[in-house]
Length: 268
Length: 231
Image (cartoon, rainbow over all chains, first blue to last red; front, side, top):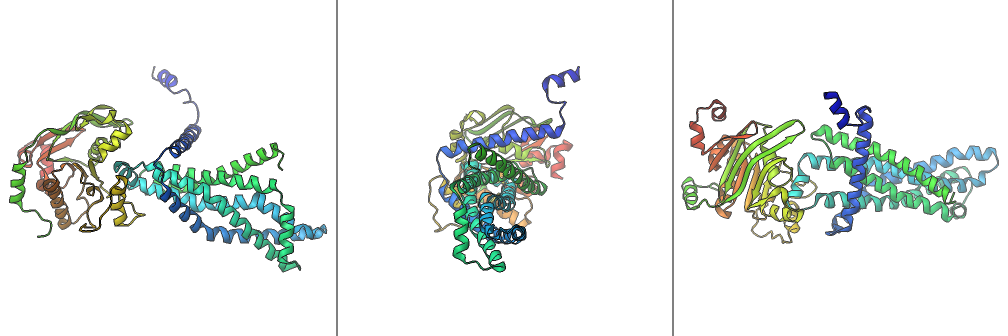
């Protein structure tokens, strides 16, 4: 009798718990994202908080993004050169590096670094705000905590990641230039002339547009994990950790979708 | 003497208080978390200008009770009426208006740690379209007192404090009652604080209001469950 009741009430009880938890969390994340779009439409608008978050996110990640981009550009050029030399295509190095960095490596690497730095930071910050009842205190004081904390952070990541991607791309290209310069005689002007000559509108725009989605995913996941953090320090740690893991995974999924969409539109 | 309140003046002031209409009426309140029924049939009334201390063991649902009052938690049964308004039926706007009249002191203080003390105080005022004047303000005033609320809900305000500071906080709560004529529900298991501040006490055991009365009345009760708090 009891078993029958359970079966009729829970149609998915035969599924493994992990699968149910996955679908449940996906549903909750979607609902959280929907609430973001609902809240963003209506006043009050927290412009000051958005600007503060833009500064926090952009300024504090710039150093790490810059250093990583520089090394990636340098290493990419150094490792690609021998193969191109073997085929007598050394002159193609700036073009190859330019397209690789602008189309794929720049946006994805920058987004992954930001998922690690910003995603975990937002997850831990909101998690500790939840645990120490700061979010409850905000609600009691008549402030909509979702609008003040979540909406402002998601807007800030959505706006700042593309900026960081552009800066990261520029630094990575400069790193690649230094690698090319180390091995052969090429001027700064000639190198960048070759880089930009190889780039087309269809290389730049899709990667720039997808970086907005990367930023949105990082902010959304970080806020979601932190906002619903479980009680205790362990909960905060888990929020920060899972924010990074889920955001990184989402970046790859978005990248995959972006490639399919640009292919479908004939932009590849 | 600082902020300490003279006992005679407290008594005189309290005599002047005409305990009038009920401000908060909690009837047959039921709240559970999954299978765990925390509040089973809780009843309590807070009158104007009154300080009610709710005593109870850790984890018995005292904090849940005051979170239900401000609408932070939804309850399954019973009713909570604040100024005659049923909390569960209020719209978000009405709830915000009600919350503006209520000050909530959290157990962990819940200060926004990304802000300075001054910004913490300003934050609450700015939200209600008021300006913060630093003149004459003591920076140590709790953020929840800045808006001069009519009702104060204190969640274990003296827990983890040394006896001297705990006494100062208890005096501050009395000052609030006298100066601003606030009505308060104080969640505590600090008997010194309870003795100092309570006009009435309610003992919460097993999710119900097990016993109610003044400090002296409860102190005389022979029931072992109540007596355990006074020993």
